[in-house]
Image 1: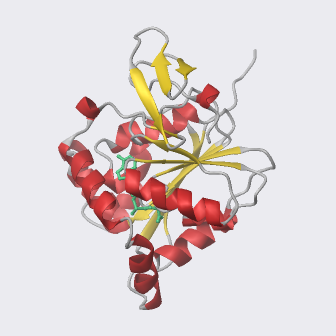
Image 2: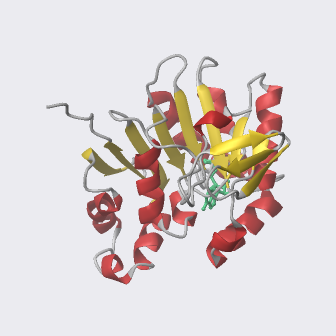
Length: 259
Ligand SMILES: C[S@@+](CC[C@H](N)C(=O)[O-])C[C@H]1O[C@@H](n2cnc3c(N)ncnc32)[C@H](O)[C@@H]1O
């Protein structure tokens, strides 16, 4: 199970104290359950219609998800598995590091990670997390899972050595908030990675009229994606991946300068 010391109430920023299977906000007294070793840190009143819809769709499809992905890959329809594998194999991290994956799905990325890291997975869908848990247990890996929103990550500031998400940003209600949350929980000096479909990326800009009017083609998208990144971040890179079906956005949280 995830070490609950790094968790916090994402809506109020307060730390928790754990009493049996409850996490209790130190200032507010708000309570969140730990079910089957998975902290459930979602405040239902903050769920948008989009969040509720995606939660339902992924809860329903969790049992079929992996089969659908491998059919898509086999018939060259989606390439999700091969793109994900190439992406994860290129990431670099050291032993003992904490790696946070947002929208972990069924957790197949875990197969490509070494066993000496702490791979933490967050997802909105309980059934997807259950599938991940089974997959991790089969592979003799410790599941460290949280049910929460990518827009409200229940992890303390500057705690994570590497943060990434694959195929998730397009489903968030507020992609600007979701990206700034990734930056908040990352340690200084950490690189943050987002890999998603180009068509999904265009949709999130179209939902925001001020930005959407500038995004009418994949080339526009690659140019505009850095707008999602908080101003204080550095080394921002936005690129289309070969095949022009996926994009990758990455940036670094700068080191603190001591003067
Ligand atoms: C397309 S799947 C990608 C799963 C996995 N990363 C992969 O590559 O197979 C999107 C995942 O994001 C999750 N999701 C959707 N909206 C979310 C949100 N607002 N916060 C956290 N997870 C979300 C879904 O439940 C689903 O597991």
